[in-house]
Image (cartoon, rainbow, N blue to C red):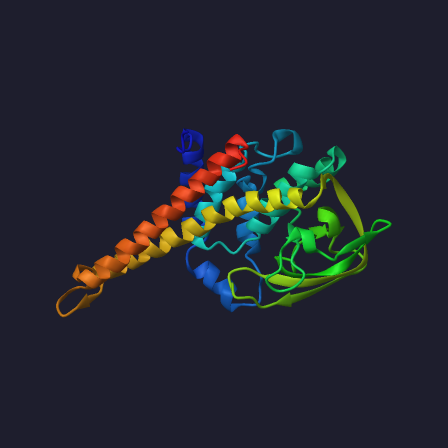
Amino acid sequence: MNFDFSEELNQLRDEARRFLRERCPPAVPRRILEGPEPFDRALWNGMAEMGWPGAAIPEAYGGVGLGPLAVCVLAEELGRAVAPAPFSSSVYLATEAILLFGSEAQKQQFLPKLATGELIGTFGMAERPGAADPRRLTTRVTSGNLTGTKLAVPDGDIADFAVVAAANGTLHLVDLHGGGVQRETITTIDPTRSHARIVFDNAPANALPSCTGPEGVRTLLDRAAVMMAFEQVGGAQAALEMATSYAKERYAFGRPIGSFQAIKHKLAEVYIAVELARSNAYYGAWALHSNSAE
């Protein structure tokens, strides 16, 4: 069992870190947090030019074909930079759903535009606060039309389409610019991501045929959770590095505060927590790569 990334993926990591250092310094996410725009369009376009949205999409559909491990590598760097872009919703969730469960026609229609960043996708499941069980959904599809309400849809206010989970664990593609769709931007506990409440009223829907039950939805969520874990590890690592640097520069009583035992203990505890999270994330990446149920 080898948890090391390949030389190609390590090069991708280095390139991503250089790109984000230049294009996404701390002032960029702060500007988005404090301003009216939900994400940085120029940053997203730059990421698309680098081929990141298509990292896991096969070359036959216009992607780069590096697989899910490449997405994990990119996720860690995006988390480190707190990049204000719809990468997680469009790549971890919408793209992954189509790759896993879409028909050939759906893949041909959506994946090339997702790979270039032309289309932004998202995923809607939760119907009430704290409830995300695919076995208890009430959203219904009748004669190809979907009706229901989804809460806290990530990037739901800017996405072009959504993969929507419905009753019986089915997944459906819905055009968010089409009829029967109402979107409302909402505030959540995470100010780094835009979210929306979306009401579907007989909105035309196209089923992803290979997802036939709650187990398929759970598989999608589990895979996305691994990628999101890398994003969180990247953010935690950056926070630890910032705290360590500050502890070396900030003086109290004539000495750096990092020299005090209490500060050392706190930083050591955070370091252990970050490394434990990293180990778990790497194990998840191995499971993705080997298609292991673990």
